[in-house]
Amino acid sequence: MIKFLKQPMMRKVLYSLVPLYLYALWMYGYRVLLSAAVVFLLGVGTEWLFERKKSGKVSEAVLVTCALYALAFPPKTPLWILGVGIIFAVSMAKGVYGGFGRNIFNPAIAGRAFVYISFAVVLSASYTSFGNFGIGAADVVASATPLGVMRQGGQVPILNLLLGQRSGAMGEGMVLLIIAAAVYLIATKTASWRIILSSVLAGTVLNAILYYSGVKRALPMESLLAGSFLYVSVFMATDPVSAPKKQLSHYFYGTLIGATLIIIRTFSAFPEGTSFALLFGNTFANLIDIAVDSAKKPAPAKQGGAK
Image (tube, rainbow, N blue to C red; front, side, top):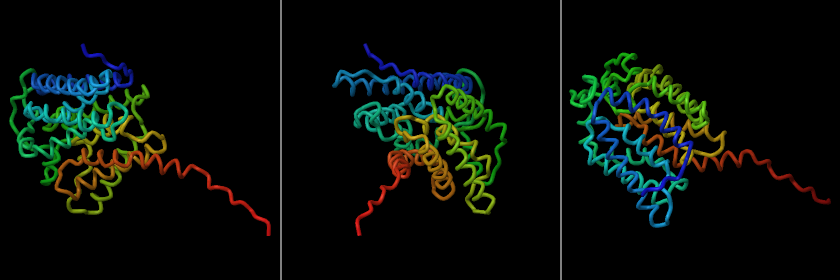
């Protein structure tokens, strides 16, 4: 019998994800349930194996990791790839560091980055349009993602982005639901509004500067509603373990993530960039806290000596 460490804050994150799962189920059908079943089974099982050696309990945080990870992929992602990724996420991005509270990187995003680097060709064929609605709707026609369309100079209706009626990962879909989740998480003091605001603001400002100054590869402003920018900013950047601990640090941390994302999207070969932007932010989280602490400390008083 698996015993869970009770973590009310993590449960609130799970509550906020329920509407996204229901919407994904309506859009893509039973495939959402299959993906979630594989991810939760292997993710929880992996953490249990690590905790079993030290007679520890499985954290409810691993349920959040599994829930976020499963929604971060397109509906036709092969189940074995999802399984490999979540095992890597829980073991190499969390377990080897000592378990909950000791990991440097957000496990869900680390697993996603690992999968996208290792199985890029397979995943490129798994993106699908929203197609028909209802149970069993995962059988839909492949199409380019909104970011891919914009990269080629095409346009994607903003309403489609807001309502999630486009190809992409299952959880990125309905922007309105992500915004509603952000309001709930902020109102319940579960997520840092400073990280969310600074990340979104930095990304918006930098993207506007690049786009309106005529940078050739800069994406239009509606690209901020595409991909996983908002999804990662709301659910993953605000992870209390891998983010800085000081409130003032949250502004610098979010700004670093938002700006890095736009730089990657604009100047690199990667069409998305959120995974790498967040991992980059995670790398500097503790250093940002140290820098903020150092800046707050008053300079030592000079001792006057007898002349």
